Picture 1 (tube, rainbow, N blue to C red):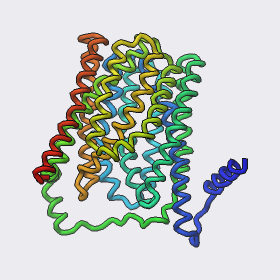
Picture 2 (cartoon, one colour):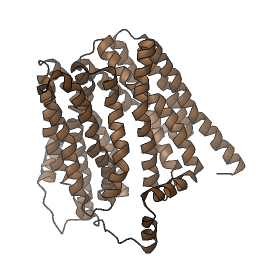
Picture 3 (tube, helix red, strand yellow):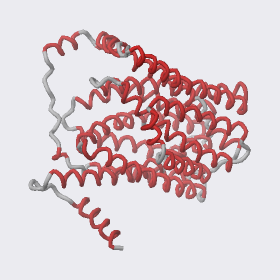
Picture 4 (cartoon, rainbow, N blue to C red):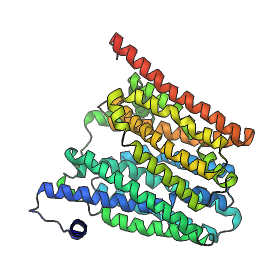
Length: 444
């Protein structure tokens, strides 16, 4: 009881705090760590009130299979077009906090707009939803890039790993509870009232998220200084955007280890992404999933991932990035295979728990490998190019998935996707072999 009282006392002090010039850097940093967790919790609640239910909402609005695929491809396309220029714009701004706050607001505003879709005529509803979901990814993707850079400045390296781990733990917990309760609430209400309420609530929670984000104390860091370009930089800029881009891409291709990883990862991600829209279509149209079941499936997957994160780090430390990446990614063929034979949502739920644990290893090893193969100089630029390539895959892959379903039906589409995923995972085995060969010859 005393611990609970102390927790609420700390929370109250953090939220009511006013800047004190005599406060120690340590105290400011620790408060930033806690506020970062508070922000993560509210951010997770805001997103999970709406995002997991977009697919089933689209189907209830009469969306075609192609439009369901666009719910994955559209945001990827917008992210592809906006992420790099948006990040470059942010890097040039001295007050990034203000811009990031606006990006939060405009991103969540789209959920409020989505709540009004049922007021339009039936023939326009699905198309409006697809368009809004795609467009909202413009402020969303830029914020995600900017937030990673910003948080690395307000929380020092010495506390960063623990701070991010703590934030992610509470994000998973709050997100899972939110999805579960929201699904039950939507199903308890008449269509479309339940959806409209939760989408509007998502926007309302974003206002609280915005307030918490602005509580982060920037006095622990130096303000971003906008430096006048050097003479050489001005010469480079005078070459034009296209010429500069060609030169930049040429520099990327000089790092063959990075390029090989991008190619292998592209093949893997394409195979991973192809069946995405088919899962939603199969759950709803074939197995009759409602919002409660969507919540249960999400809950099962999250619990599996929490379990997975308890053992994959030890495996990665012992066996290395690429071996772990192959060992974990090889098993993702299970997902479409289970769907091919599943006749009940209970089967999918059990599968989601297992695959949640598997994907924890995939995500951990992917990120760790990416950091290893990117050059230390201009690391952010290389990561941006990598992410852009993966987003390009996400535009095409869901369309291929729907095409396979239309041509062969669900069963054979899932079997083909399972085979593709095995091939994708084998790319990392090839990378591991090439790495070992280079270590033997010393050519790296």
